[in-house]
Amino acid sequence: MNYLKTTFLMALLTVLLVFIGNLLGGQSGMILAFGFALLMNLGTYWFSDKIVLAMYHAKPVTEAEAPQLYRTVRDLAMKARMPMPKVYIIPTQTANAFATGRNPSHAAVAVTEGIMRILTPAELSGVLGHELAHVKNRDILIGTIAATFAGAISMIAHMAQWAMIFGGGRSDDDDGGSPLAGIAMMIVAPIAAMLIQMAISRSREYAADATGAKIHGMPRDLASALKKLHRAATVAPMQANPATAHMFIVNPLSARGLASLFSTHPPMEERVRRLESMTLA
Image (cartoon, helix red, strand yellow):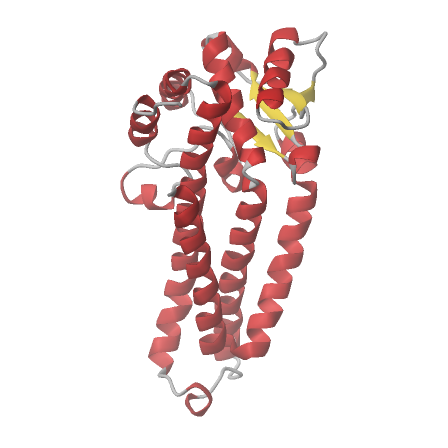
């Protein structure tokens, strides 16, 4: 179901790009904006592991330096039939974790010092299973594609704004639409693209929970870990870059009320409920 939802949302982003591109920027504007967005996000995709790990001062560790953590990752990777990813520790007492890398052969798993302090070995194994699931499910690639489409839509809207300011926009004769409709779309389109992008991110979190629980073998361990991490993030939130918030297992940023629409993570209560109701064959 999560894969079907992701496919639908990606198709919706594609339709929105084509519609907005033709309405505001024309075919040439749409291709130009998509090209720029593609180049920027390909760079991020290719070097995502190095960029994000450096951003959070993550340190690589060997089996001798962190034997339990390293062995747990290795055992889970074997269960998932994946190559052994690189293992990193982030020097902060905030409890969180993320995985990155463009594919299973170039993957890294990073955990904070805080998460190893508050979770039991079984709970930590559940978290690491979730992170390996993101790599196995190619969620970095999916997120990059979604970001490319959303970025292209935002660029087209900005291009149309500047064209209107300097009198170079498409005329009514060209598109048959009203200027007011065009202005409305300049405002609505980037917001709609962002909402769809966030919905894709939330869908991938559900999928990683389910796949990670299967890799680890005990869904309730991951559910218990998520409850602890959610409480810890509320008490001591992480100083995280909003652009990387979607990578963490629990949202390091506060998102309440209307702001939850733009949250990269689904409601914690629903994630826990789904895991606790899971039965593995």
